[in-house]
Length: 387
Image 1 (cartoon, rainbow, N blue to C red):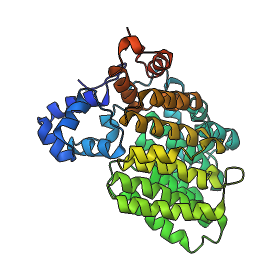
Image 2 (tube, one colour; image 1 turned 180 degrees about the vertical axis):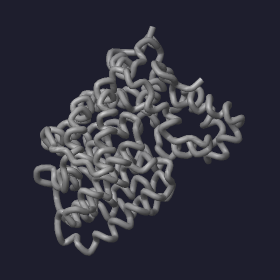
Image 3 (cartoon, rainbow, N blue to C red; image 1 turned 45 degrees about the vertical axis):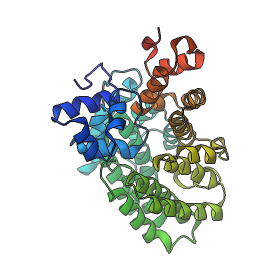
């Protein structure tokens, strides 16, 4: 049966459950998802992690599910990793509804403190702050608050509310008619789109980048332009369009090289610059099925140049995934632990990482499991599987 409250299943178990529920054989599902039957069998048995977004999207589509349904989100709202943050979701929903009907209340709280919590993937701190800030701000401050709201709600498993927050960001940006902030808001709206919505996020990112291109003499506009191309690169890889993905990366790299590393994290704390492009390049290469190339390129990236957990932690997670695929398990565990040290809440809310750690555990002899592996297992709630 699928995951229920208080129960977490691996993605492979979810796939097997829904495949049988839909009355499909492994061969039939593999064909619909564009996978080989042996690969699908390994996923269902927990011998291979689902380490590419494209695979999740393909499996969800073949099973007539959303990606969040396939990964068991939102799951148990009382789980330690999300309890404090999830408790604020009803108040966030109410604040968004009130704004939708035109009710604006005096804001309370610090936008700067919220942005710091968001940049640290500290959902437990950010979520309780959101209702009071969403209810009364306008302009760039509202756009930034909505940005935190979008990725907080997405990671907690509430994508519909994330899209509501994204729409509010666009309204806030349109009120000031600043091309850079309109670009930021559109970037946020693109982030909120469902991952299974094939080609639409890529097309919107490309269109917005095209609209901004004439204004890229302004460094702030150029930062947004570069971020849009980074997102388009990743989404093109998910859409299995490698040539487009690489072209978007080239556009982003050119913009980053012309700007250099940002001061004070740049516009909207995007931290757009050469280091950020390197971080996204790792994700794109992994998504393109080039883990060896991703690992090689990662060696020249120093994510600590950007003092943001939301940049550093994904880098080490993607590096860990690439290392798992290459059988470099000890290095992979070290990368996962590095990510957890940077952003513990983020790691605990990522079902794909739980699956990857479980795969490493299964192919490690029990008498060879050391302290790092035990620590990684505990992080994702798998310590009971180590005798």
